[in-house]
Length: 195
Image (cartoon, one colour):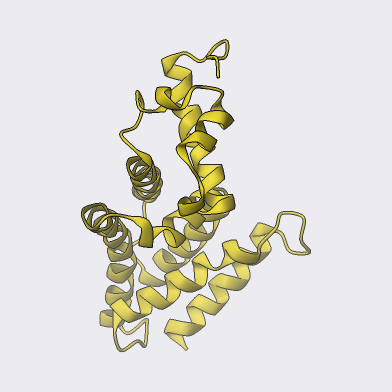
């Protein structure tokens, strides 16, 4: 396959990542070949190795980029001191951030099994950093009596699983807007910890 016009380095690397993300989300990591990614981008398969060592590295890069973006976006959003208000901000943030990136979210959660042990450990460390932010909110609310929970870490896992689940069913064309969904899920989250 001949190199297509305009496949310059600065343009090709992001196109490779985008093509891999779409293909991994649609077909699964194991089913996608480097040849398919190259065809989608319009380059020879050998050219991919100028940008990534292998398919595993590409998967790892996609996952870490998603989690680093998630952490940076959360860090850019100051959380209120009040744990109830902070939990609402976190809840709404999580739903909105993930709804805007369905392919990245799907890969980040469904393709963990395909990471090498070292890559899995690095991705898990990033996930724990994000989860720790919610655990801190819940622990603060537990200490002040605002939340009635036995274990902030278990509550963290339950809340994140519930919030991330929105991506499996929410569609912009559905009967509820994203704002409606945020409000409903905030009410459910609040009731989980405060009622």
